[in-house]
Image (cartoon, rainbow, N blue to C red):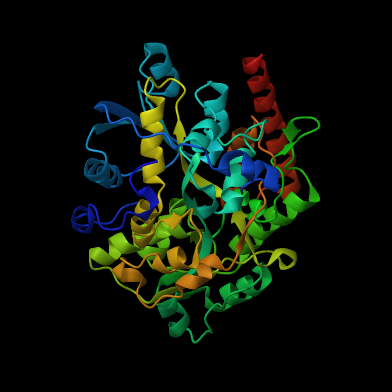
Length: 448
């Protein structure tokens, strides 16, 4: 392990303070935890040979500014490491880099991308390195560790959690004040939320004020732990009564008088809430929305907003969206695996996490002290109900399959049809299920 890696609090602080805003469970058995937690007789010292490593960004946002923060912190702690960034794009897809023999040493991504990387045989277990370096996994949210392990049939840890996405309900106090309507509160269900939306959705002085932004079906369903795929048949699981409940909610939101979403605003929920300020309530991701709120604040855009816990269906109030984890993976193509893992260990350390969470990323370390630091460096968040972000427990993730991404994409298409057309819900479910299953069959042929 590095010199007091998780206890470092001062080195590089001057560098960090000069940088501007950055972006955006353990196994259920003690036996699994012990497998990687038991002390080793001798912790292996880091290899300090000068090395150039590359980091591949795919499936999760990583700003240039955030990457430069990584570089600066690494320079202060590990001056023998030079870190370069490769982004997924034209000519640099995973397949392109595998073909050219230049696939990077580390990967920064989110858990929905894990399956694709596994199919390309780019992922490897970290368990042996964690054991040899005596890494303390107990500091991380155990459900995050459990979620990562669920992507391995052997229960192996294939990634180290860096940050998490948690849902929250952002609301515009100015709109509620304008129409004399009480503010939202923590612990609401969707029916209570719709009732508030009906009270503030109106046209005033020629401007449309929408009460509640539409949420993608994927996120609504994940908060109920609804499956994407039927495990017994490996077909789409989206044509069911439970999914119909989700789709009906989307249609109900968009059918509130004066709450209809203009087609040219579809997919621009943060802009509607922050820039146009014509949406009273926005169900969003805490990390992504907080970054945009702070960017607007730094440019002089201010309005009176706050946060409450994310609503859910009545039977599941207190549960949030499924785990969405940004993580570092070690590429099995790397020729410098040990040093690459040392970089991962440092970037997921308590020291780095405390910097990240103060800038608006939700840390994968869930101690009360770390949660108190959330958004503490953001001027736009001063005086806000920040604790509400952590009141919901993330929903259980269904066992991942190779076809989840196909179903998730089609849930997005369903959401758009529910908002932009008058098509019958049953018709939408049947036709989209047929299309999804066709795409799954085509993917099965590719795998064979």
